[in-house]
Image (cartoon, rainbow, N blue to C red; front, top):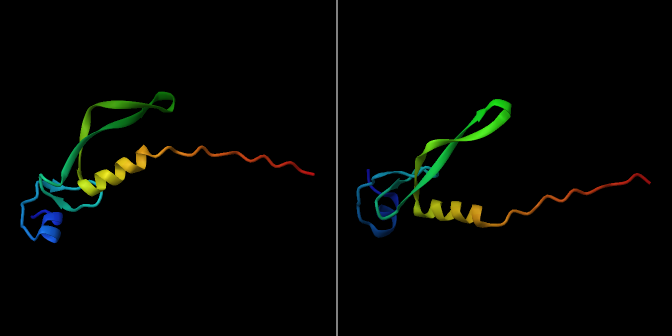
Length: 86
């Protein structure tokens, strides 16, 4: 299997080292980003607990940039609107 990005843009056939966790495209060493991700489990009283060691996640560079942008944006707080009967 060859890297999707290398084949589609550079027209070079570089062997892939894995598959992107998000989009499923084959990625080579130049287009791969490896991250860690802590899995969680639910224990008594619905408490979430991190599981060690962290899992490994392989992402294509574009998917990793999109993921980073998603979580770097400040989330807007939901505003509760009160209505009163008149």
